[in-house]
Structure formats: C-alpha cells, structure tokens
Image 1 (cartoon, rainbow, N blue to C red):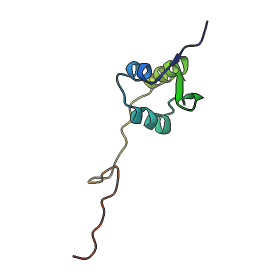
Image 2 (image 1 turned 90 degrees about the vertical axis):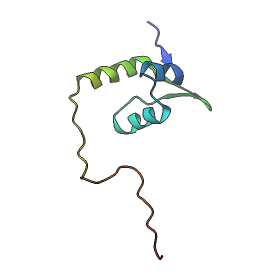
Image 3 (image 1 turned 90 degrees about the horizontal axis):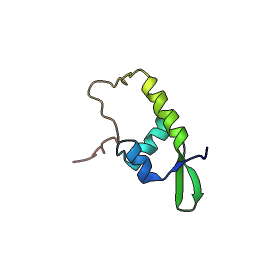
Image 4 (image 1 turned 180 degrees about the vertical axis):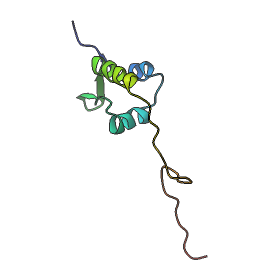
Length: 83
C-alpha cells in the first residue's frame, strides 16, 4: 500500500483546525511527527505517523501541569526603571 502524505491544510483539518503555531508547539513539546522537506518551500507529514501519534495521545491520561499561583506563562513583563 502506498504511503500517504499530508500538506499543511489537510493536516490542520485532520487535527480539527489547529494552527501552524500549535502544530509546531506540539512538535517541540509533545512528540508530534516532524515534517518531511520536499523542497525550499514545501513540507509534508506522513499520515501514518500522524495517526499513530493521535492514537498514542488518546491512550495517555491527562495530567495538568501545575503552575505557581499568580504566575503567568509567556513573556515576562518589561520592568520600568526610573520614574
């Protein structure tokens, strides 16, 4: 059987409309399959690898990440010095 590859629009639709940034965050943090480079401006994802990742994700137990009370994620605010 021939392997099937997904370009970004089809991948995003398969993942429920996830954005490019969310998919890259999943690659960095959650083991989402890396894309295959076809050329300078073209990448695809192996559909079988994506399906396996989704199956593993469904089997995992959800464990929320604890964050210190009052802490914010993301960029730190700029501290103004001198008034």
